[in-house]
Length: 75
Image (cartoon, rainbow, N blue to C red; front, side, top):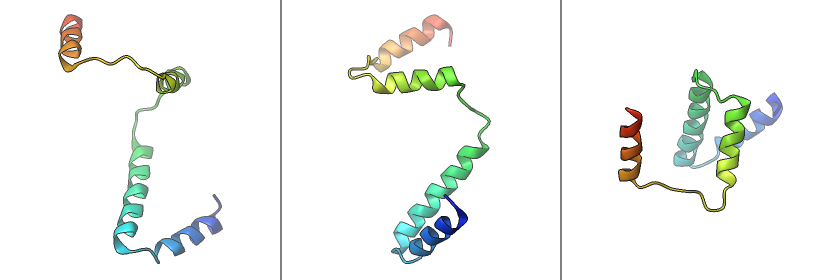
């Protein structure tokens, strides 16, 4: 998005109701926060996330099963 397009959008945001403006500000704040995070997925990890999100019927665990697995791993 060019600076001109961003300025156009921001000008329209200023015409929105106050609560929607707050929502927009929060979304932008979250984007800034995300950019400061030291955590990044490598290409392989990102591909795995996409693969799992695309699963039609993903496997799930109960909290008890998860707790059991974590104990076995010593976590």
